[in-house]
Image 1: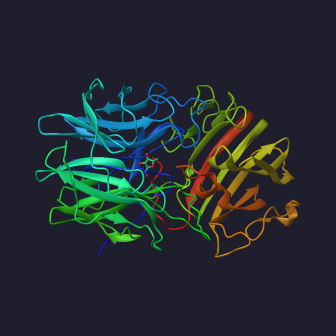
Image 2: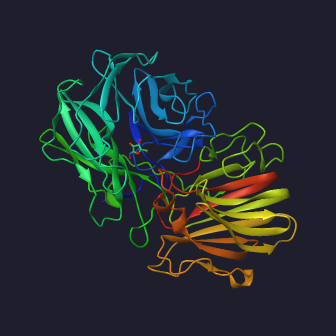
Image 3: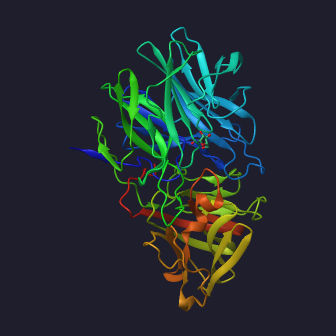
Length: 510
Ligand code: 6LW
């Protein structure tokens, strides 16, 4: 029997929402403080996904002011297709609140925002047979809106509050067999996450809870996939039903650390006496009938194409003049620019870490300036491999502490920088610094999720405990992003390699 492997989209891809148009599926995820926002993926089988763009790729659609702190910005999106148009609805919690954008083609262009004057997060859309458009938000609450103008025509009113778990959120309405089903997540997005169900004859209710709730949760279990929730449903052309949801794979010693953030998983759904039943979410499941594998993702981005691959994200904005693919053809040139929260002039191009074990390298032509590779959880939690003034350094920023943990001279000219994340053995020594680099140990006795090794020109500078770049330490809703940066002057990157080595599926770079 053919099986597929979870997660179907590894790395920081939370709050997934999915819709089907004919034999094509489209999926979107949250993007928080990163620009461009809301990555959009395409699949023919729900298992193999390819990123085809970012829904919010213009400043007119996505403004993330300096106050848009880590895990602010864009929360949980929903994607739907109605009457020949794609709709993506989401919340910019840092500026403006709830809005929707539309497109005729999922690759875009997507419209500018239609703002909706309703509070709360996790907006979702459903249309009834009369053509009325129903919007649900966390709470959960229901309103009727005009999706063309954003005007609220009715409500909002509270509907079924769930079974008592905290944060009833991510409500989605589905019309199936004469019933309106309300899929709801509750219990918080951490280890208590759960998915519950209720149904009514009308979107207005009254909703009756399903006979067994939650219909899916991993709370209190020792399963390797935890925090399962924030789900969406889709029916395949063959009539089978599937749930797309988020989960996390914490590693290391208690309380365990999640470093990849919340990822996207797929699980089959059965209907039992008129109610959907799903889970548990396994690392392998029998595959859907359709099977359309994609070629393995290229390891290297040579920056030779006319545009940037959609996987590249920056923090809050990507000002004109801060980057170029043409200034030095075949290279990504970055220029330091305006101030950011922790590092003046910081220009960053990163991609999500999608594997627990991975090797990332980049070839850097440092101009006089300050540039390098950063493993980033947020502004206050990152490890940097930095080149400046004829030296390569490893700098650890953990909360209010900033420490140069290793430093060595490097020859002038192009330099290959390498970051190697490795799942830690059970209870390993946590932090070892290369003796030849002359750096002393900066921590001992770790039981962290992984170690992160930094090399310049093939010489190991330091190996650090990965726990400090985890959600449990940094807080928030994101996961690690690894990328190139410049904080002073300019730098050109000839290529960037990302190689996942833990045999997990990964979404190819388009
Ligand atoms: C999102 C909420 C959630 O709005 O986390 O897991 C929040 N669920 O539904 C941020 O991703």
